[in-house]
Length: 561
Image (cartoon, rainbow, N blue to C red; front, side, top):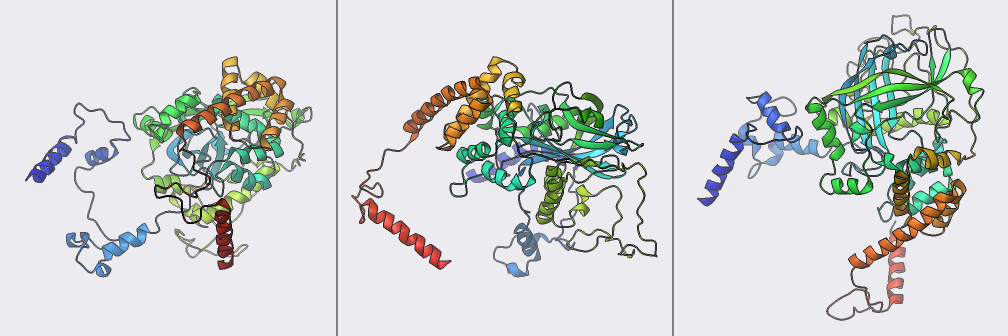
C-alpha cells in the first residue's frame, strides 16, 4: 500500500508540474515539457521500421518469443548500429541554424553571390566545437574551439572553417597526423601527455605562437557566444573584372569577447561539463540570438610585393600597417537544431567547398586539407555525405551515382556520363574567373619574432602576462627531460624576461605538484613485496622474479599474435 501511495504522489506532482508554476527552468531543462505543450495529444501512431503499427502487447517481450517480435528486432538491430565514428578532432560540439546578412558593398573585391547585394540573407548551419575533447569530454579545456559555417548559397555550399585563435600550428599538411597524436592521449596511459606536446613543439617550433595564444586569456572564452573566430588561411578573392585581392576573414563576436581564467573554468567544470553547449542553447531559445560581425583584412597583389614577411604563413599574424580592413556583414544564429544527430553529428564541413568569386587559399596546407577532409567524411558518414539532408546544396545536378544510401533521387534516368548528346547537365563558362594564378613558394624556416611580439604587445598588461606564465608553468610541470631543457632554451631565444619568469614559475609549479601528490597518494608499498596484503608476502616476493614474470608474459603475448 505504501508503494502505491508513493506512486500516486509522483503522478500528481508530475502532472501538476506541466505548467511552470513558481518554478524557473532553463530552456534546455524544459525541452520535453515544451514539446508536450506544443503537442497536447500523441503525435501519431507508433509504428515499426517498416511502417506497420505497434500492438501494445508487443511492447513487452518478457515471457514471449522475442525473435517473432519484430519490434524487439527493430529496436536492438538499430541500437547496435546507431553510432557513426567519432570525429578524430572536434568530436564534442553542438550547432544551430541561422543566416548571414550582407551589410556592406564588397563587389570591388569579390563577385561571390553570397557577399553581394546589401540586405541579402543566406541561410546557414553552424557547428561549434572543442578541438581535442572526445564526445563526452568537457567544454572548458584550454584548447582551440571551432566555428564552422555552411552557407547555402545559390551557387553551391560555401564552407568556412574557423578557429578561436587567429594562427595555426603548422604549415606542412604532412604534419597533421603527428601534431594531432602529440596533442591527444598517450597510446599506453590514455592520458594527455605534456611531454609529447612540448617534444613536438620544440622540435617543430612552428606551433609555438599557437600554443602561446592558448595559454593566454584567449585560451578559454566564456562560452561559444563570446569568442571570435578566424578561418586562418589567406583567401584569394576575385571581382567581376578578374582582379584579385588577398584577404583574411575575421568573425568578431557582437557579445564582446570575454575570457575565463583557469580557476574560473575549473569551478564551472566541477558542476557543468557542457557549459558552452547549454549557454548557446538557452540563449537562442530565449531570443538572445548570438551574432558575429564578418570583416576581412585586405591586401592587393601590389601590397604583397612590398612585405618583409610571408602573408600566406598560417602560423603568424599579418603585421599592423600592411593591410586595411573592410566590413562585410553579420552572422546570426536564431534557431536551435531539432535533432543533434541529424543536424550536427552528420553535418560535414569541407574547406574545399568554395563558390565562384572565392577561388580560395593558395598555400600548401590548404591543398592538403581539400583532400583530407573529403577522405575523413567519406569514412565517417559515407561517400554520399553531400546527399544527407543537412549537407545538401540548394541545387545539385551531377554525374555521380549510386553507392551506399542516402542516394536521394540518384539523378533518376538522366544520362550518367559526360560529354553526352542527350541533354545531361552541362558545364558553364565563368567569364570572371582570373586567368593568372599565384604560385606561392614556402620555407621550412621558423621565425620566433611573432612569439616575442605576442608576449610583449598582444598580452596587453602585466596581469595578463602573469596569468599566461602561470598557465605555461602548469603545463611544463609534468614534462620530463630532455624535453624540458629544450623548452627553456626555446623560451630564452624568444625573450629573456619570458624565460626567466617561466623558469621561476615552473619551479613553483613543480613544488606544488609534488606537495599535492604527497598529500593525495597512497602509502608507499614495501619494495620487498609485490602487492600490499594483510596476509603476509605473496609467494614470489623479490622484484627480479616479478620482472622475469613480466618478460615471460610479454613473449607469450607476442607468440600468440
